[in-house]
Length: 358
Image (cartoon, rainbow, N blue to C red):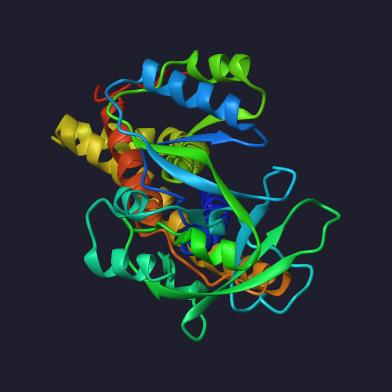
């Protein structure tokens, strides 16, 4: 039981801590565009090079409808980095928005692609010079704070752009669409350096290298959200490790107990006990050992997981306890039941005659 308790406690602690961190990360995570969106970038590509990239994309993906997007450039044609700051860090001179807070400059066609539909009110706001924001947390007093910087050592220029909230094509989508007029009023020029398209089929593997052969700085990105797969794999690996440890400890203890009570089981058969009764006795013993160890391990794991989560909160300023209920149910209820079934299935049903010593 102690071995089962230790294995369960470790699995519960790691599972709850990982799930809490995952839930916090998912709350802050925002997609730049709907899943399956193809984005073609042309960083520091001149007009001639971008024309070749655009023609190549239309030739290689003739069924796709490409929507252009703009990039801000300086007077030498170098692309500028644009990010949306959250209201909490808008006044800090050293904090930058995350990559998922990068806005996109475009028109109503791009807005419709990102929303997955036509939104007349959002289109009207964009035409009137307002930004359309898919993460309302970025809006403060009816506007967003946009930072424009030309390089690592360059000073950042702050722009206050009026904004309206809107819904993206799917839940968890962030970012914003800002009008080109907002950048032009701040003294920045815009040129077409992005192409967006909704994928109807997988992108050929050679597409990225072919664009690199055309011009350096052109690359392709397909928006995907693989965090759920990572989450499932992590909890699955934890559950698999717990299965091995819990079943190993349970069968070792059950085997020793069954050896000690072998004569009792033989007596049970001798007085008319059925083979099924022998199986049920051993299965109940295995289930009892695994169940009691799992319950005590759950209680101990909750204590240690709370301590770990509080440590995360102290380090990062957040980290609420989030329980992975299906994982805990499989661990505390499913494993003892599995142990009982396996132990009962492999129990010897025939009495073993005792040997007499002459």
